[in-house]
Image (tube, rainbow, N blue to C red; front, side, top):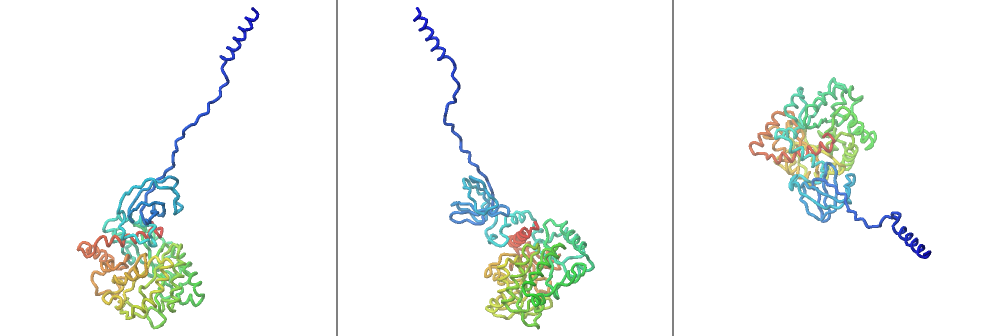
Length: 449
């Protein structure tokens, strides 16, 4: 019986041990996690496409991605990438997983020259498409500042104004600032505010002691005092004064080569040979960068010993080789330094184009664009100078020749002749668009827009 009880108790104990819940131990198992890849999408204008990369312009950022896909230059595309797109770096490490062409011909390929303003072509083209024909015509004109400028600007919306000594007479700094601010306040597109402040005999603001303590010295005076370092110092000082007043374009330096004091242009030049003048051009343009004021090389393709085109027509008899070897190098040096604008003279250069003044000559402009690979803005000398007085449809011819900006005092007729030229088929609107596109890109480059 005792054995029976022992057996029963043992069975009970075994059952109790079996039935008592064990302490919970989690079961180990493989948990499948979905691989959620980080993707980002960006749109931009195709500005370069090689065998294994594509470079787009997004706003003013150039971004390069690895890609074997072929895109048309000037097309607007959207890219989706695995990884983070870094807008502070040109070369991207993220991988393209999808691409969509939004507009295969967003900007005509003929507009895209990989030029000095090309980072802003996307923005410039967007702005161009928003302008009316009349607004586009106005953007190509820099007009002499009229007495009723605010009303004129409200009506026409010109691209810019040029100011002369009379416009600063009896004014102080605040009144000049107000004059320029009033103009910008009625401008739908920010304006170029230009001046010929060469120093020496051509001084606009520095003849007014309320604006500048003493007149700016001529290039020859500066060079004799301290060489190129003195030139550089003068550019920095002059630019600071112009910017403070609200002026953003100086139609200088004169980089014509002239060593003969009897030449009309001599006193406005460095007065030295080709090599020295080339260094002068390079120095001025380099010193002007980041000052807020743009500078203009003039007068292409070189004035030399020609007559004063303010008063009469002038024929240049130099051979093509002499022009290329003597007169062109200063312009090449300035372009290499980042020249944003170049002014073309009204001299007739017989051995390049015997039939047209330089300002109206496509052959002269082709030398500048094709031979010198210049991609900046081309500006005419004043269209109302005597050298052009017997020529009809000057403005249309100037635009067809390749100028982007035209300087004029006869603004109403200049505007009308361009409009009439388009209506009569003498000038295609597409030709006008190309000129305005370049001007707008420059304004973005200058941070005016």
